[in-house]
Every structure is written in structure tokens, then in C-alpha cells.
Image (cartoon, rainbow, N blue to C red; front, top):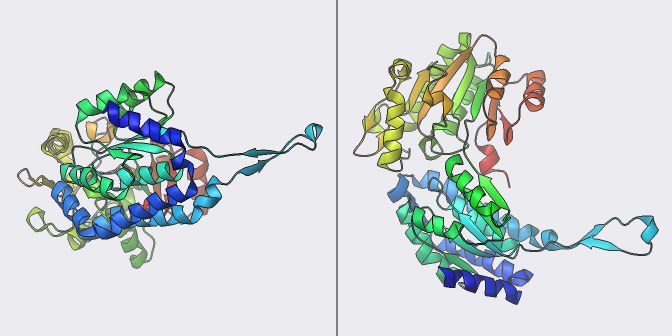
Length: 405
């Protein structure tokens, strides 16, 4: 490990990674890797997570192709020096800001999007002229093996290295000095990463979890629009790795008078998208491992939570599958409402008035995303001005991830 990191530092010192031609060549090679190995990527994602080819392309391969292509089109503009203002006192002096790479970057990727969350940060690190050590998640072993075996065949092995291993390897890596750390994962591990980085004053990017709500203001007087809302909620909850995604919808806030209508629409949409019951489920991922499966099952063991199930709830431990499950008003002090769910369980919380949703959201930690289904422009402005989140998406779900570039 230490030898590999030393080689990365020596490579960076040569200055070779700073050239635009090197950066472009590596990005083009990465695009070639993706294009030439789509079937292998689909196979690995199916082995680890049960992702269908459609989901794999939509959330992994397609996202990466778009990211590389966009980066290549913008790279020269991004790296070009930019003029800076100089006080008149210093005339005729000139100044400019020159973007520079940080050095050796460590990337910890997550298991739920094992290609996107590994290669998208890599795209950024390469385009900035850094050398990189990538540590994929061992919880997606087929994807990890693919990255370890395939990346050296396409990218400059002196500047980009991939290291397999579990938590023990991650702990050893954090004891070393890096010039930048990018981590995707849980808040618990994020704190450990931040603490380790602080010892060396290493800048860190943490992409963590949270409880991202969906607000349903109205189901409209038009049945077709109500159906679209239901489809987008179902797609934003169970579409991304069966809810095992930090930006998946975690729970829904809706007025009491609309709850029963919304639930019926969601039921019909689930059956159409994924099947009638657990035995006939299709086009939906499975839970990553037994530990996560049991964690989710335990959420449903609370008697008050179990009593709130209005759809689904069946589980298949052998196949690590949990049926899409809807819960109506589970206790607000239960674990399912206090911790990120990260799975196929959707609580629906009813309110007297939908505007109460703002106070409800503000009573919790800031979410990564707020999804709001409303045509009320005044309410939209209130959500934007009175809440704080990573993004706000109106009348759709997941688009800020899939189409942000």
C-alpha cells in the first residue's frame, strides 16, 4: 500500500498529470472502458445488487457517459487562467487565478452505486490533474473486482490505482496523509473520515445520507396529473436501488384528506412497475446483504410500526428481497422516522395542512433533497426560502441526479 501511494506522489511531482493532453487521454480511456465493458458492468451490478440492465444503464453507465462527455467538452475552459481584478493603485499590474491540482486524492466509494460513486469522483480528480487512489466498497464484491481488474488496463497505472479490501484497509488508508479525500457513505463513518483528515488538515468532501421528504400539496383535479405524481414518487422511492440511495424519497408528507387517494394510486403504480406481490417482483433491486436486510426487517418489528403497514411488508430472507411497503402514520418517535431508512419502506405522514410540512422538515436535520409536488407558486417560494437542503426538486424525482449535467 505504502509503495503504491509513494508512486502516486512521485508521478504527481513529475507534473505529467497537469497537462491537458494527459487529462483528456485518461478521460477518453475511461469512456472507452465504460463503452467496451457495458455487459460486464451490468453483470456485476446484477450479482451484487440485483439491478436490472435498465436501472444499471440509467443510474450508472448512462450517468458516467454523460459526465465524461461533459467534462471533456468543458475541460479547457475549466483549467484556463481567469483574469482577476487589481486595484487601480497597482496599475499597470495584472493578476489572474490559476486552477491547480491538489495532489494525491483518496476516493472511498459506496456499494449502492458502485460504479457511479467510484468513477464520477475519479472523473473530477483526473480532470483537475490529480493522481488518485480509489478504494471501492467491499460490500459490492463483483463490482469491486471488476474495478480492480479493469481500470489498470485502461488508465495510467502510475497515476491511478485501485485498492481492494474491507474496513481494515480503509482504516490504514486514513492514517496516511492525503491532499484530498472524497467519501460517500454513512454519517457514522463520515465522522471517522473527517476526524482522521483533520490530523493532517486534509480537505474532505463528504457525501452522506439523510431523510429526504416528498411533499404532496395536491393530487390535482386532473386524474392524469395525479397518476404522474404517483409514478414519480414510486420511481423516486423504489427505482434507485430499491430505496438504498441517499437521494431516494425517505417519507411522504400529505394532507389527511388526500392520503387514501395517494395510497391507492401508489399501490396501483407499484403493481404495474414491479409486480403484484413478492413472488412476482421484477425490475427491482435486492437488499445488499443480510446485515442490511435484518436492519430493515427490525424496523418493521416495532408493533406500532407493523400496525401502520397498509401495503406490502412481505420479505424473502433467502433472496434478500423486501416487498415495496407503504406505512401510514407510523409513530414519529420510532426508528423508522428518526433514522434514514435506506430501503423499500415508505412512511406516509399526514398533516392537517400541507404548509405544516415546512415546520416538520425543519424539525429534522437538513435533507439532501426536498421533493415537492405542488403547483402553488407561493408555496414553492416558501419551501425555497424557509427550508434548507442540498437541492429542491418540484414535481419530479431523481432528475437532479440523472440530468444535473
